[in-house]
Length: 215
Length: 215
DNA sequence: CCGGACGTGGCAGCTTGCTGCCACCGCGTT
DNA sequence: AACGCGGTGGCAGCAAGCTGCCACGTCCGG
Image (tube, protein in one colour):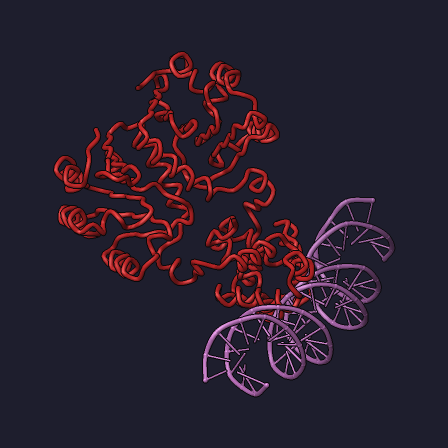
């Protein structure tokens, strides 16, 4: 089933949101959908209260959703309401929602016209998507952890340093490899360790690994 | 479109496999499908040769696919043929295939009867699934890295050393904390780095983080 | 009892990492 | 020109890490 535009989605599939019993999961690139005031509110009103009702809500976003302070504030509020929010360092669909592991709603990429939604209940499709979501979810990091320990946007230099460290070079070869003096390279490493809040290089590596800063 | 059983899948959707131009990705729990000799061979024959044709093949499995030696050998062979294989530590669908980002094939969970496949070409669905796949893929570890660097069961001592390193202690305090001499502690660290195949402590931390050996 | 294997620890010496200090350079401001 | 500022690099010295060597225990099997 395909619907066009937010209004139609709410009209035709609104009952699915209301009817969520156990679990409501969604993955999206950013907060775009829910920042459209009309759509966001009408859906929000239909969603049962968090937690208490035994409904687990999981939301997975890319770092794009943290771009501006307003979004971060919104997400923190959402978390405070008992919703689990995680950040995935990899691209995500523009919008994927799975409800109670029985229905799913996918949104097409933004185009000029109204957004197009696809609502599916085929168990095969839903289960397949759900499993993939679970995999992406498990690999993602908790929002709080992400905001805390993270250096969300390291510049290219830092990434280069990271790669050199990850390659196992000694400082000397790494510095030569990057066209830096030994002194500067080590300064960079120290800065990196500082932003990663690491006391030792091992710890820095650990954090980098946990945060998936490998690539 | 839904088909039942391997034979029907090959008959009705075989051309999709043959027609793959750029990319063939699949995610599955284990090698079950392709270990069914008939299905595996008929599909294998239809798949273009690896690499040379510009076709990128990516396969994502759970560790279940590494359970027995035969499977591991098979996967190594597959890798040798230019296929990218990664292992995800999280559950995966029983079978998800996306071809050229245009068609996807999902398999339902094994039941008593013949396996049920769903073939879809809806761009919305395919893109959504593809993005999720990409996220799971990026988070997964290369097969070779997985087989190599995996130290699934380090003894308690090693875990203690790992924790000390992760805590950011200097060797001296860590050694005292563990009731070891400095010499022995460093020996342990060296052994750990050896099993992690790390050239530097940073690398060791990186691996540990990637492999989720934090806890 | 002896010999060997194994794990541990001390010592020494080397390499590597880390950092404070100073000097230099390029840049934009005053 | 003079100045401050930020990034860089050399130097020096210290701290941390790494490892070969030897010595001492323990625990075997001979």
